[in-house]
Length: 203
Image (cartoon, rainbow, N blue to C red):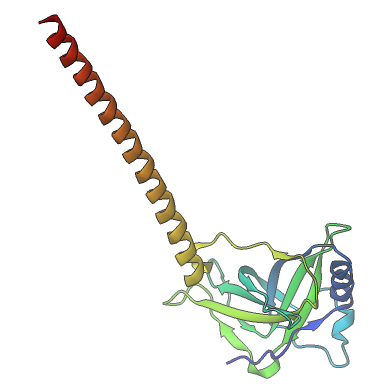
C-alpha cells in the first residue's frame, strides 16, 4: 500500500493560505495523480506542478475537525477511460488563488517506492481508489472545494443526506396533497349540506 505521509505546502499554497487567514476563501479545486519520483534536492515549497501528471482526482468530500488546523479531503481516482496504467506515486492538491483565479499547486506528497499500480481500463475489472489527504488550513474560516458530480465519488454519508432530503420533500408533498384533499372534502360536504338545506327549505 502506498505510503504518502503528510502533504507539504508549496510556496503558492502558503500564499493562498495567508490570504485565507486574512478573510479570503480557501477553495480547493482538484488533485492530480502522477508517477514521478521527487528529484533529488527538490524543495517541495518551490514546486508549481507535480513531476509527471497522469490523472485528475476529483474531490468527493471534505471535513475540517475543530481546533486542529487541518482538513481531510477525500479524492477519487478511477481507471475509467485510462488507456495505459501507471504507478500512483505522487499526488498534488490544487487550490484557487482568489486574487487571480489561477489554479495553483497547494500541497504535494510522494510515496516513492511504495507506489500503488493503477491499471489501464483494458483489464478485467474497473478500479476505484479513494484517498484521504490531510492538509493544513490553519485557522482559515472560509474553506470550500469543488466537489465531483460523479456518482462513484459519492460517499455513504452523502447518499444518506441526499436520501433524507428526498424523503423530507416527499413527506412535505404528501402533507400538502393531504391538506388539499381535506379542503376539497370539506368544501364538498359544505356544498352538499347547503344544497340539502335549500331543498328542505323549499319543500
